[in-house]
Amino acid sequence: MKLIIKVTLASALSLATAYGALAAEFTKGTVKKVDTKAKKVTLIHEELKDLDMPAMTMVFRVQDDALLEKLTEGATVEFVAERVNGKLTVTQVK
Image 1 (cartoon, rainbow, N blue to C red):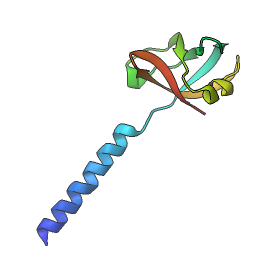
Image 2: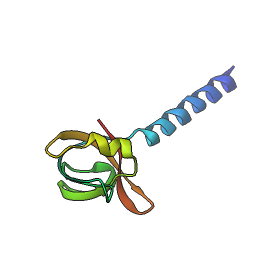
Image 3: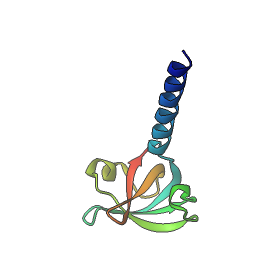
Protein backbone atom coordinates (compact mmCIF):
# COMPACT_ATOMS: atom_id res chain seq x y z
CA MET A 1 0.00 0.00 0.00
CA LYS A 2 2.82 2.45 0.85
CA LEU A 3 4.42 1.79 -2.55
CA ILE A 4 1.21 2.76 -4.36
CA ILE A 5 0.97 5.99 -2.35
CA LYS A 6 4.62 6.86 -3.10
CA VAL A 7 4.18 6.19 -6.84
CA THR A 8 0.98 8.24 -6.95
CA LEU A 9 2.59 11.11 -5.06
CA ALA A 10 5.67 11.04 -7.31
CA SER A 11 3.43 11.11 -10.40
CA ALA A 12 1.42 14.06 -9.06
CA LEU A 13 4.60 16.01 -8.25
CA SER A 14 6.10 15.40 -11.68
CA LEU A 15 2.90 16.59 -13.38
CA ALA A 16 2.82 19.71 -11.23
CA THR A 17 6.45 20.44 -12.08
CA ALA A 18 5.84 19.91 -15.81
CA TYR A 19 2.81 22.21 -15.73
CA GLY A 20 4.78 24.88 -13.86
CA ALA A 21 7.49 24.80 -16.51
CA LEU A 22 4.90 25.30 -19.24
CA ALA A 23 2.90 28.02 -17.52
CA ALA A 24 3.87 31.28 -19.18
CA GLU A 25 3.87 34.52 -17.23
CA PHE A 26 2.07 37.43 -18.89
CA THR A 27 3.61 40.91 -18.75
CA LYS A 28 1.76 44.20 -19.12
CA GLY A 29 2.79 46.54 -21.89
CA THR A 30 1.73 49.26 -24.30
CA VAL A 31 2.09 48.92 -28.06
CA LYS A 32 4.24 51.76 -29.34
CA LYS A 33 4.65 50.66 -32.98
CA VAL A 34 3.61 47.77 -35.22
CA ASP A 35 5.66 46.85 -38.31
CA THR A 36 3.60 44.25 -40.15
CA LYS A 37 6.04 43.90 -43.07
CA ALA A 38 8.97 43.06 -40.75
CA LYS A 39 6.68 41.14 -38.36
CA LYS A 40 7.86 43.21 -35.39
CA VAL A 41 6.24 45.15 -32.57
CA THR A 42 7.71 47.80 -30.28
CA LEU A 43 6.41 47.49 -26.72
CA ILE A 44 6.82 49.64 -23.63
CA HIS A 45 6.76 46.86 -21.05
CA GLU A 46 7.05 46.08 -17.37
CA GLU A 47 9.78 43.78 -16.06
CA LEU A 48 10.05 40.50 -17.99
CA LYS A 49 10.67 38.18 -15.05
CA ASP A 50 11.00 35.02 -17.17
CA LEU A 51 13.76 36.67 -19.24
CA ASP A 52 15.35 38.55 -16.31
CA MET A 53 14.91 41.93 -18.05
CA PRO A 54 13.96 45.26 -16.46
CA ALA A 55 11.09 47.41 -17.67
CA MET A 56 11.94 49.21 -20.93
CA THR A 57 10.89 49.87 -24.50
CA MET A 58 12.05 47.31 -27.03
CA VAL A 59 11.31 45.59 -30.33
CA PHE A 60 10.08 42.00 -30.45
CA ARG A 61 9.49 39.62 -33.34
CA VAL A 62 5.99 38.25 -33.87
CA GLN A 63 5.92 35.02 -35.88
CA ASP A 64 2.16 34.44 -35.75
CA ASP A 65 0.21 36.70 -38.14
CA ALA A 66 -2.94 36.29 -36.02
CA LEU A 67 -1.09 37.75 -33.00
CA LEU A 68 0.26 40.59 -35.12
CA GLU A 69 -3.29 41.51 -36.14
CA LYS A 70 -4.29 41.85 -32.46
CA LEU A 71 -1.65 44.52 -31.86
CA THR A 72 -2.60 48.14 -32.50
CA GLU A 73 -0.58 51.23 -31.66
CA GLY A 74 -1.49 52.69 -28.28
CA ALA A 75 -3.22 49.52 -27.06
CA THR A 76 -2.55 48.17 -23.58
CA VAL A 77 -1.83 44.44 -23.74
CA GLU A 78 -0.64 41.52 -21.69
CA PHE A 79 1.88 39.35 -23.51
CA VAL A 80 4.35 36.51 -23.21
CA ALA A 81 7.82 36.93 -24.68
CA GLU A 82 10.22 34.05 -25.20
CA ARG A 83 13.54 33.43 -26.93
CA VAL A 84 12.74 31.66 -30.19
CA ASN A 85 15.81 30.73 -32.21
CA GLY A 86 17.76 33.28 -30.19
CA LYS A 87 15.34 36.14 -30.97
CA LEU A 88 12.99 37.77 -28.46
CA THR A 89 9.54 36.90 -29.74
CA VAL A 90 5.98 37.64 -28.59
CA THR A 91 4.27 34.24 -28.42
CA GLN A 92 0.96 35.10 -26.71
CA VAL A 93 -1.23 38.20 -26.38
CA LYS A 94 -4.39 38.90 -24.40
